[in-house]
Amino acid sequence: MNILKSLVRKRLKKESKLKYAIALLHLWLGLLSSLVIFTVCLTGSIYAFKNQINDFYNRDKVYVESTGNRLSLDVIQEKFSKKNAEITAIIIPENNKKSYLVTFADKDTKVSKTQYLNPYTGVTLGGADHGLDQFFAVVLDIHRTMLVNQIGKQIVGISSLLFIFMLLSGLVLWWPKKWKHLKAGLTVKWNAKFHRLNYDIHNTLGFYALIFLMFMAITGLYVTYPWMKSGIIVSLGGNAVLTENAGEGANDEISNAFSDLLKDMMDKQDEMADLKEVKPVSMDSISGLAYKHLKYSATTIIQLPDEKDPRYRIKKINTDNWLGAQLPDEITFDKKGEVKTIERFADKPLNKQFVEISKPLHTGEILGLPSVILYFIVSLVGCSLPITGFIIWWKKVK
Image 1 (cartoon, one colour):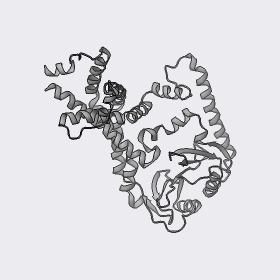
Image 2 (cartoon, helix red, strand yellow):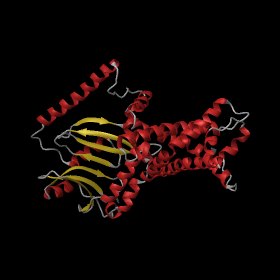
Image 3 (tube, one colour):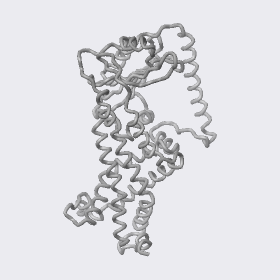
Image 4 (cartoon, helix red, strand yellow):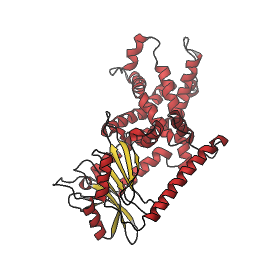
């Protein structure tokens, strides 16, 4: 009986009907989604440090002693060739004390592996710890689907929508009636009794983390629901994401998208046929050519031509901006070393920029370690809100 009373409290004398309704919805939806929100925020806080944990756990492979100059890419490629292996991709960190990450395939079996490589000696150091990879795969699966696939994905998506409502409704409930009460809403009374302290923590930390939690929830919904993806992209000046239920007005867009895709496929097929007998230019040459167009030092990812894609693809992570954000620039070459495309992040329209960096924006990797730490703290605040909110409600039950 006490539980029912606590779920439908009486309206206060000076409380408006709207604020009363918002307060009830805030409580009901908070209790309904609390376990999912807690789990999503907890797994998010763990996953935020994935790269740092991976580097620490595999530190004997990730970090190397800087001894002179790094070996040229051609020398490294030759070493693999002598082992009957063919490099398909290589990640070259800007930090000269970190090893390269090389993906290669056996020329006979075509079995692919990814291993660390000492760039000063050319010695392969082995792959990342498989157990750690599996652990983070499970953490990510819990974060996205609660381990129940598509049903879980929808549960997480709906809970995220409810979380956005609770953040906004929480702001309405927090908002002081008079400005002289603002200071009380911005501070925690640490020497207060437990229930008052818990109340202050719920309100104050929720306020400070609101913008970041909103952003994390929205970017999470971006990868869950096509309508959210369309809404964000359209609001940034792009075209709606097409779905099976797209109306007739989408026909032209479908036609244009298909034409662009078909043209790209035909160009690549022609390229593969025309340059079939052409020996690819060396990796050192490609690296040098890429630098002529993207003249800055950065972590670089090189993908070599294969049966599906006849082009070299070089992606450089540009941090030369006032925030130090990790923004990707990409350039492609054919086998002869001729430039095919250059896509600088700064030149892309806003909607394509968002698509490009939506994942690091959601995970906190966008600004490197500082933003990862910030996201970790914010995620812990997100974890605390269902707990402190439940305690506030449970006190009323008693």
